[in-house]
Length: 103
Image (cartoon, rainbow, N blue to C red; front, side, top):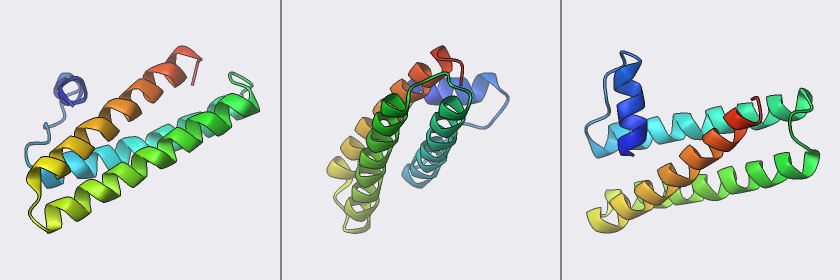
């Protein structure tokens, strides 16, 4: 999360402070990863197998984000923050992979 927040700040964007802001930001990253994987496949920067795997991992990360939201709603902040951190880390790594492939 720190790298994503630092990246936002370097772009002149305000950094997400609250759990809800960080969660919303991560959902946005999820959408960006999906679009980047599709674009990379269309541009032949990655194989269809790589695209499928990237999209599958992105979908699994969304399940973590949904779980973080659900945990936050019942007041389980430790689980909510843990799931958010894990999902954000995975999505960040996917973004880096796709960026390195030209997406």
